[in-house]
Amino acid sequence: MTSEKRSALLPDADRGRGGIARLQGGDLVRHLAPAGTPDVVARLNRELAKALASPDLTEHLRMEGGSEPTGGSPEQFRAFLKEDIERWAAVVRPSGAKAN
Image 1 (tube, helix red, strand yellow):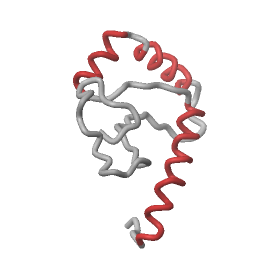
Image 2 (cartoon, helix red, strand yellow):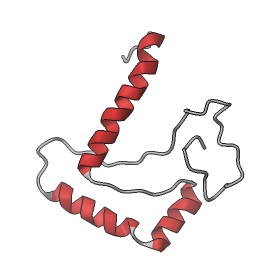
Image 3 (cartoon, rainbow, N blue to C red):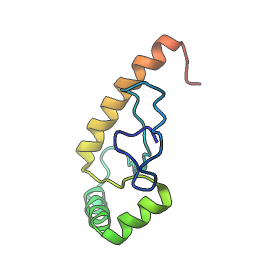
Image 4 (cartoon, helix red, strand yellow):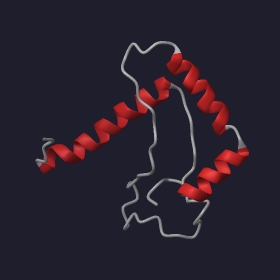
């Protein structure tokens, strides 16, 4: 409930930011494949975009998952990941936390 937009499922719910205006989060479900994967990635992306264009499916996902379904290109996701890694690195590095 920390996304920028209010949930269609719970439009009046507190977004849980605790007074931190820039706090943002949300659901993330993406499909990843190794670099150099054949054209099947483009085909899967086209088919997923078609599915997400279905009002019935998007409404079902909103009601079942409580989040706003979105799509995008592999390039858009790559840019999102880069930005997200940079954003969270600014939090994790000073904390001293390490992956093991």
